[in-house]
Picture 1 (cartoon, rainbow, N blue to C red):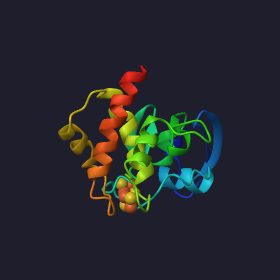
Picture 2 (picture 1 turned 45 degrees about the horizontal axis):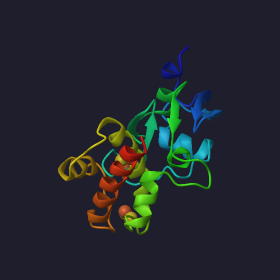
Picture 3 (picture 1 turned 120 degrees about the horizontal axis):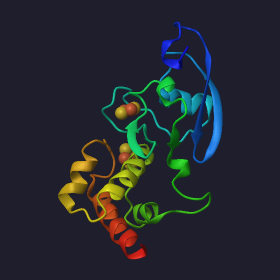
Length: 167
Ligand code: FES
Ligand code: FES
C-alpha cells in the first residue's frame, strides 16, 4: 500500500532527505508537509502563516523546486529531497543571497524570510540575470508585512550579480 492510499488516522513512516541527511518520521495521511517538517523533523525554519498557499512563508525546496509546504501532504514527499532554510548554506555560514539580505536589511521580523530565501534560490537558478520586474514578479508570491519589499528586491539583484561573478 502506498503512502497516498492509507486509511484516515493510520500512521505510517515517511523517509526523505532533509538538508542532505536521510530522515524518517511518523505521519498521518492528511498531515501537511509543513507540519511534518516542523513537528516530526524539527525543521523550525519552515514558518506557517496562512496555511492555504497565499503567504509563501512555508516555502521549501522539494527536489529542487520551490513549493509551498502547506499545500502538500507529507505523504507526497515520501522519498523526496527537501531543503529548508537551514540547508541553504553550511552551518555557521551565509550564502550570497543571505549576505545580500543582511547587507540591505531585507528582513525585520524575519517571519517571511525563510520562504523567500528558498524561492530566491530556485528563482536565481532558473533566472541568473533577472531584471527588477522579474524579481518583483517572483516576490509577488510572498507576503512581507515589514520591509516594503524594496530592500528585498535590492538584495536579490545584488545576490544575482554576486553569484554570476563567482561562477
Ligand atoms: S503558510 Fe503556506 S503559503 Fe502561507
Ligand atoms: S520581515 Fe517581517 S514579514 Fe517580512
